[in-house]
Length: 148
Image (cartoon, rainbow, N blue to C red; front, side, top):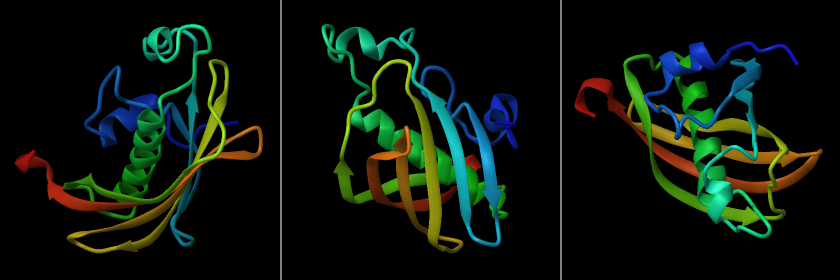
């Protein structure tokens, strides 16, 4: 899959850095349909797998939600909010359907339900092997970059 945005371009959009920059690339972006698909490669080298859980490592749900939120943040940026950062306010309707293991490739789907100058809502899914692993509605505020 060819990247529309690679990790270098994503790092110019999001303020996150290792180990919290959780989107490796963007492979689909349709601003007319308000949708984006990012990729996160869950590798065994990631520190959280050492302790969550040592005998059966799974990716922490909170980090999956964060990867989903970051993908939504990229969509918000690409919709024209270049001087603002999307800050997570609320997670609703979250469902954790299947665990994510080392070696999984996570497709992070986000569709904006509403975006304004103050914030908005994103419907998001984390999909592994064509099956929904996690889904949620994410609400965010838009904050000026200088105020963070």
